[in-house]
Length: 558
Image (cartoon, rainbow, N blue to C red; front, side):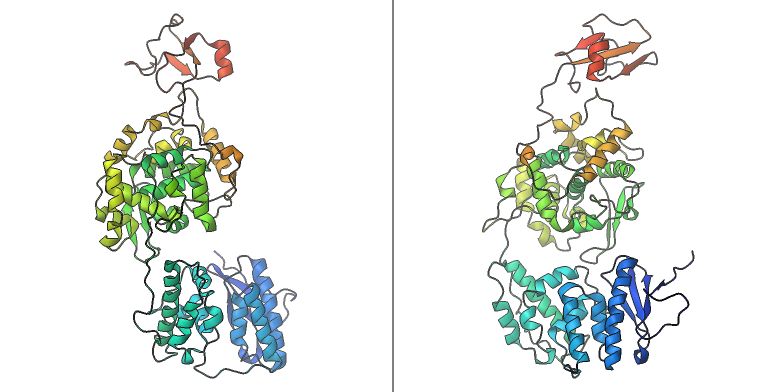
């Protein structure tokens, strides 16, 4: 494959020699970069982490060229290089602050800071941007959720940001923590303190900006906010999976989380290349704890994923939303609770936050998985292989709830490929999938709804299933529940059978009206080569029916 050519700087004709302040953009891997000609500063390359397209990269190049031109004219290009790097990576108010700093430098109002006067905010940005990880790859790991760290640091940055690290003291940190909003939970306060401590520890080593960490051991507050967390019962999971008012892309996502115990963000980033559908395994190399793990998926989950991929073969990710975005997005917990209500699940403890309990979150699908699997007899080792828990104490916290589920004899989850109507309509188990495990068979046996996934009197074609999936993809992801969802979805199991009419087309003599033909489905005999069954629409049945079976119809034909 021929390498991509660098895009020409906007406004520069082809063949013109580059002058100071001009440059080009280039895509390196998945990150756009800009290269500028800056006279005595050479031709440095700037990363553009916020740019996603070539148009955005060229627009940022134009901004950098304008700022670099002002620095060159003022003779401050060498001192202004760090500011240009920040201008390449920042947006909004942060970019505005960089512009103001460059204005001051060009007017001669700013001076070069002496070595050792790096501020807390500047060093924190080096950590969060990944610059420190590039400089010390053996000791510092790149932070994947830098935005979460920035949002937490925002509570203390106004106080701690301007403080030079060389003069940072315990009093500074205590003062910042005392000014935190009172509504913050103790867990959030603990995370903010951990970030402050971590930044100062990195400034001590490997950066060696300061000689020692001014925060003593034990300074990080303890989290006393251990509230009870919610989880779904197997029958509630079944009701959620069956509710076709919820987009299919969300239901298969929730069902996968409940049955495999993966973190929601891990499943959201999961790609088809991580899943071996032929052998039924998944490999998760990148995760929160940087501890690669792999395990065998449940057979019913494998069969469901095979059918799901047939409906969305062009997606690189396994679970995607309306625009191909990774699920759950920024509002996973809210969508999850809205979908539970839409499915008619109204257990109060799932939706209430009190002094001792949290309302259910998308992350609590892991609690659902651990609780139910402990209740059906799975070992802690089997569970930790899937969840990634490194300590038995973490799983021990779920044993009390698991004993409750076991005593209530609630069983296991229904097979995913059978409980989702759109997938069960595609037929039986996929080839090579094998029978479901014993636990799934037990759960299916106790769940009457799993045998009524799709009425046998309706022939569902591939186009019908694809249409249902497309409708699910187009459904709003974060819309408010309207009045039409005020009532729970009608339970398909409790619905009374409606009278239906069937026409039998056979090469043999038709039976007398009111009598059951020999090859009737459900009898000991099966339809032979000389007989064919055609399930017609209700209007056709009324017109062409030759045999009627109403109250005497077998189960599943209503």
